Every structure is written in structure tokens, then in C-alpha cells.
Image (cartoon, rainbow, N blue to C red; front, side):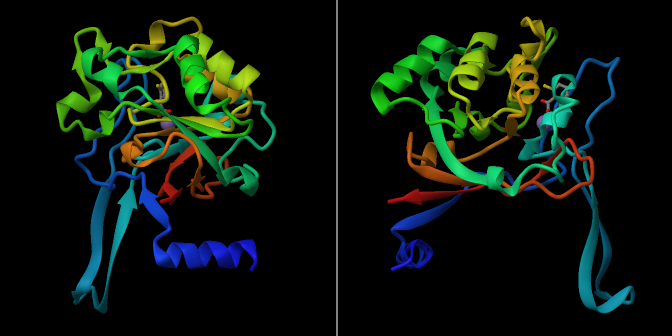
Length: 257
Ligand code: 23J
Ligand code: MN
């Protein structure tokens, strides 16, 4: 039997499950808030064009607007200054082979319940590898924190000195990008970087190191607790926005039961 026929039969029988890692686009879903001197990201908005009424008797539809970085979204290399000259670094140019591929999940959810500024470090990555094996080249690496279960103000967790949420250290990102040659890095928080990521060297190291090397980002993911540590396949194609730096998207994982 062909691989694809086998896959579709196993999906139909439930042996392969489709897990949705996406938050619903909704005006109430928080967006990143940068320091006030910078431009700001827009929330999701939806207005009715018609709803089976005088504006269109047999159809309902909406106009929508948002930022490229609203809700569950994809970061392209061109999002960051370090990636501005990366070839094919905009969402419409990324090779389609990069949009479906293997994914590993590093569970940090225990640490992040105690420490809202929890850091993913090289030591934690190496401890994960001692248990699950070396992270394969060209894999997505997702940082599970269970942050997606937070609601309201607890999600951005904004304090006087800015947001507090977990993320990777610069050394962890260098390990993943330079030594493991990952495809990209994804988080449940509003950025691939920690809330306090501006204070690292370089500032926002996940963005800086990933995108400078042509790697990809995913943020505001959900349901990472439904994924195995290894063996799932991630389907994450952004919208084909000309020169786009990112895009909201539906992120799905194929998981073998
Ligand atoms: C712009 C500046 C800083 C950050 C971000 C955007 C994001 O997290 C994003 O959505 O890419 S940290
Ligand atoms: Mn983004």
C-alpha cells in the first residue's frame, strides 16, 4: 500500500489523530504589548458585510482585520533585523517543504507553574535529549509551558517592569539553531521570546538567532499537552502574504495513537 493511502486509512480509523494547536481568532485574545515608544500590534476585528439580509439576501460574510502577529501565528525570517537579508525570508517565499515536518515537544510545564520567568536552558535541552534522543535536524521544537491555559490578564502577565512569561535563553537558542539545525521554535506564549526577553544579549534572542539563521517561529500555540515528545508531524503553512513577516494560521499536528 502507498504511504499516503496508509496514512489516510489510519486517519479514518483514528490511529492517526489530528490535534488542533490553534487558539480561536477573537477580539478578546491578547496581543503583544511593546513599550509605548514603539508601534503596536492590532487585535483581531470582524465586521459583518451581510447576514442573509438586505445587504445580501442569500449569503453571510465578514471583513476581518488584524496584525500579521495576532493570535496563533507564524514568524518568518524577515520579521527580524537579523533575517532581513535571508533569501526567501518572507511568508510568501518560504519553501513549501518547510511548512510540514517533524516536531518535538520539550515539556517545561512543571517549571513554569513555579517560575513565570522560567528559562529553557542548554542543560534542560540536553536532559530532554538524554531521555528522548538527539533532536533531529530540521525539526520544529515546541516549548510546552501550559501558558495557553491562562485567561485574561494572566496571559500577558504585565507588570510595572513589563511582561513576565517563560522563554529560551540565548545559549539555548544557539544550541538549537547552530548545533541541532532545527527548522523553527514554537511557544504557547505571545512571543518566541520570554516576556523579559528584551534584557538578554542580544535582546529577544529567540527572534534574533532563529531568524538570522533563516529559521521559523510559532507563537500563541495551544494544546501542546496533547502531543508526544517525539514522532508527531506539524502542519503550519502561513498565509501567502506578499513580503509578509508573519501570519495567523491554523496549526495542526498529526499524532499516532
Ligand atoms: C515585535 C517586537 C518584539 C516581539 C515581537 C514582535 C513578537 O513576539 C512577535 O509576535 O513576533 S517579542
Ligand atoms: Mn510574531
